[in-house]
Length: 229
Image 1 (cartoon, rainbow, N blue to C red):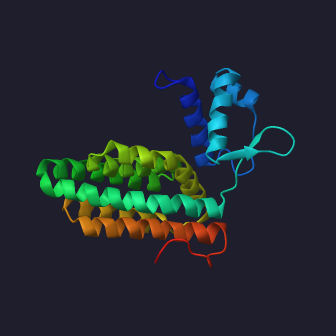
Image 2: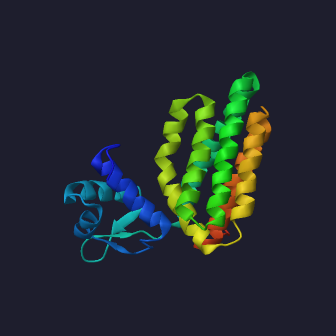
């Protein structure tokens, strides 16, 4: 374990990374003793991490004793994406408006964004899901950072780890997502750095709805749509 962050935070991130990577699949039992031994820590930070994961709906009580990785729940997925729809569209629009007013910011955002997209493409070619998730988080963090509003980013962070879990499960189930998925990221980036706020909002909305539609196809009946068309 590294020195960065509290020990419980590090354990939380390690366990969630393994869940997202599929090392711990849905309904896999998570035992404090085994995780503590694997991570080289005491049981206390493992228990704290598992409690946080349970509060976020990523793990749940298992029959008998202990916890297990939760199977993604379609209703919860829709609820989270309703919130994300609002936050991401607002962030993309705000970021574009700032770039329209600051050419230096637009240039640095383009440079960083393209580097992240290159990392994502390399991760896709290497079939490295963990690196792909990290690139996705980095891309959207860049959008939020470009807004200049840290409160907006803090609001989104609450949902991101759960959404990362959904993305990991969905990408393992559906093979036709990645190319179109990352092309949408490029469209969002182009609109932001070009200062086109309405276009940035539109592409963020398309991106979120596209992925939600895939998740609905994977996890349940798509007849009930809770996002406005």
